[in-house]
Length: 437
Image 1 (spheres, rainbow, N blue to C red):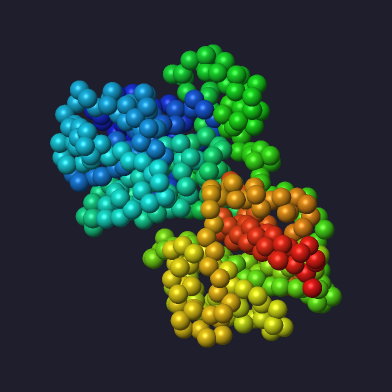
Image 2 (spheres, rainbow, N blue to C red):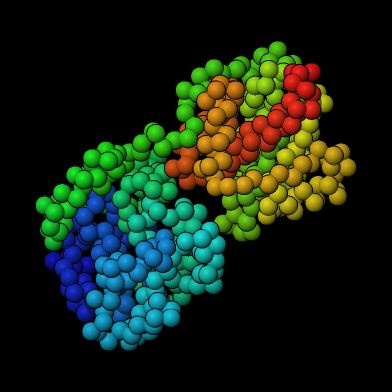
């Protein structure tokens, strides 16, 4: 028997014996570990065991998350299962705090991350264990924010651990795939333990397989994900298709540049203070006389606010050497609002170009609306070349959206289409149906 198995057997708060796969997961020394794959592999139970492993250590603090409070409160969910394990022990439950407290002061808390700001509730918290059940349902940026809360006092004996459990699919599918399942390079502090239905001897396999067969009648991809833990996605989920951009332009062809009627720079300034700030993304788009939109440059950077304003000025100057710049369009929210005010007040030559733009509706709805232009061949990307080193990263994000870890460049791209569509509609009416001169 391994040391981990002995510790689990002696733990009065874990009343079940782990399966072989669960024991492997529980024995991992890595800072981050992912137990994932097919449905029925005992993922949630493994996560609860992992959280309870050190509750006899004074001061130990663990927290388990589900995406919504409803998910937490469901019958046989994490919180319900913990109650069945702990109610007859000496651990004390607080309904208000959703927390079990153990005799030596250790705690196990349950949380949720429903809205984009929910992670802020834990800004001043400190945990030695953070677990995400059904991790693919979370926003990756929320999970990254909570990882920053994993720390311990100098004299603490417990290890620091972040644990994930999930099926494939969902909002964080791409995040989990690249971080654990198919990383570009092995990471010494991350591990992946695949789990299958066959790895859980306690489950009624016959009835569970019957349920999965009903899923198969409706969705083959979902069936493959749940039955065999296959990390595939349905290409039909992608909003922007690669084949819509088959007609590429040559970035070195000056004739294409000379056909430009108007050039705009679009900024999605998704900015936060500190290490957890998001990317600010920029798209430079040009409109030709036949209403074709040419994407000239795309970029994304994590920037402090003064640097953000400086980047906006520098990119504007570089793309206005031929005096065809017509606008610097900034999303009028958060740091974008601050940038608009700063540039209008402090930059005399940039100020006349600044245009505030407020997007509406959900991201996916906006993207589907914008995709009509791309589907009709009205949006051109450059052919791959050393001159457009940004192209690979942009395409990787665009064609994976909405199942992608970051979407900042896609947001700016969508904003460019929606803005110019509005511009053309208004201009067409103003010009009484004539073309752009």
